[in-house]
Length: 179
Image (tube, rainbow, N blue to C red; front, side, top):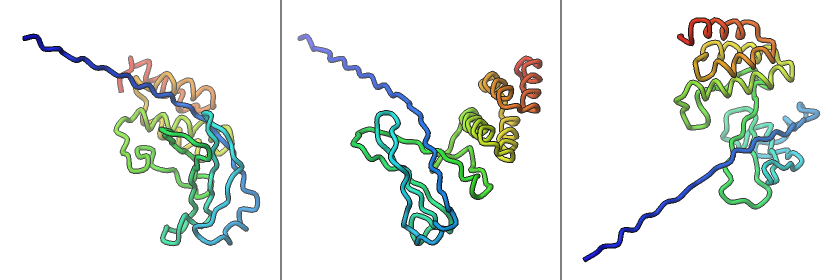
């Protein structure tokens, strides 16, 4: 008796699209009068073919939140299977850099992932002349130079005028990529 063998296969592909939107809040001090849970919404913008808006809560998303501000990203067009990672810099408001080894409730295991986040923040800090943030990111990157990150970090250091970081990358390479 012959038995038929069923073979099945599938393929899943994902595409990462990134975009940015500048949401300038004029008269920030006046917004503090809004009660918690009330927001100011950005103009709609398109990223990846979907329409989005940023919701800014100057006194938190709800009354039981810790004092502070809140942001949410709202998908305004229909979409299924859309996964979003929202990165923004609270440093501008509270002079505090988030833990680059965590994203939400997900613990990032790979040092290279947190280094990539620091690289992006460094570029933004240089672009907007936020020198203290640039220095903090440079310090983070100094501690995470590896064979996986050295080429990108060296290019970034040159592009954004980070002398110490550039020297550390060159020294790392001169040692043959050994920490």
